[in-house]
Length: 269
Image (cartoon, rainbow, N blue to C red; front, side):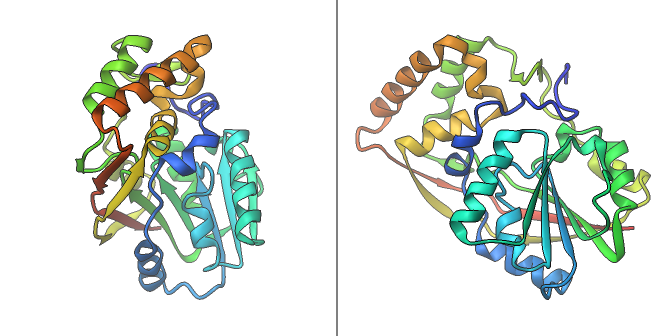
């Protein structure tokens, strides 16, 4: 990872308007499982770190007195606030900060979540800080999910990847940096080094979802490796080629994908 991550606010620059549509929504079964595993009863507070447009924050908010979504991207928080208003969810607070700035006077939480965000952060520093922000009996949840691409998928991903490379080059881009070797792993060792115990893992099964051409275009622009800002003045040209590619792949404009199971690791201090 070269110059990417650590709260870089440009990682998803321009992606906020595409993210909620482009990424598959988390299934209701995930939130039912959260409630059962943690005995969620409407009390306590939730902190969702790297919340984006509230994809996890908003469906979990009703299980807590207050839900706090934190992100380095102001546009993502604006979209989260809009979606919360649309859904009539009134107990959310949106905080524009880097995770590395925690605890930032935010207080303590019953649950802290990282959903497809932990790998972007200064992980040892953030994990250690989060441990000190949990209430007695609280937990940290690391959500392993892939919401942009299925394990069985009729979308022509190889062709899309090649198109992106033609515009942006062979090395995966990410904000102001690049990811020549992908995002880092090894989070288990990091959580344990920060003083957490576990994990206790629960899973929810995958499912099949339908997508149309606009969904797939949004999915491409929702990725850090093909965020709209990376294309500069050629964004419209790229989108036109992408839509033409998708039409050739399926003139009906309909695609389907089977999403992988979601696993959640619960860590306790």
